Image 1 (cartoon, rainbow, N blue to C red):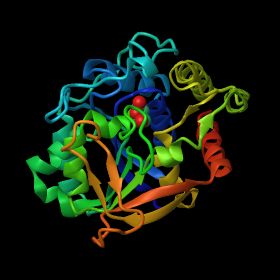
Image 2 (image 1 turned 60 degrees about the vertical axis):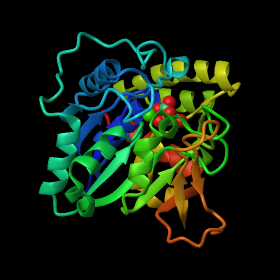
Image 3 (image 1 turned 45 degrees about the vertical axis):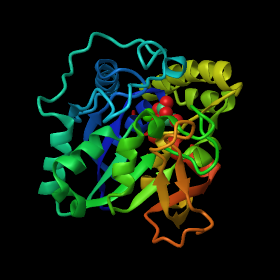
Length: 310
Ligand code: BDR
Ligand code: CA
């Protein structure tokens, strides 16, 4: 099987950490690099979290530090969900793995320019790094094979009634990405809320009894606690790994092409992904929106991903 080349742009984050775990060891994926952005926590913390996850799992993947602030907005972080470190729960040993000297935005640009147009960019945090790369060097646009992102919703948000965290945190960056003309696959809350990491799932993964399984359990035990406090759910939505599961097996998602605009004008609804599901505006589609997810298949992909670590 030819591996799909990807750059994973993330803000770890509990679910970002599982996305890294899944992407780095999948026979279907060639993870070229991890680029880190501020989001769930400040950049210094999300960077340390990405490095810790890579070191713990013995991943030989380069990690790049990206943007520490949104393009225009005041910074928004999510300690009520991910804790003070951004990855509360697991205990890691002394960190020796270091970030690469190159800035994440330049890594994205250089990698895409040097490619044969076969690199997919996956974002699981605010889209600041990708938007900055697009603005800094628009020559990358025709080189992007596909953009796959966790973010947005065509239904209700999780930070405001209108907006999902990753888009709300940098709606202007999302606007740049959604007006880029490149193929976008959006896995929003509409599907990620269907894959709740209930206690039965934590137990199922815990029975695998490997390093990766232990990390999964430690992460999800904390994540589920905050999800219960904030949203009242018994299991947190495993948002970010949906992007990687889709790349491993595209049949996990049911998609619909439609025209999507980011609301960057209003106060109450800033960051809303206005997905024209009913084709009211009669505009050419700029996105494929995930409408549904095969829940059983998703958890099987997660289990296989954990089992891939001896
Ligand atoms: C998104 O926000 C973050 O808290 C998660 O990591 C995920 O990327 C869900 O809205
Ligand atoms: Ca994230």
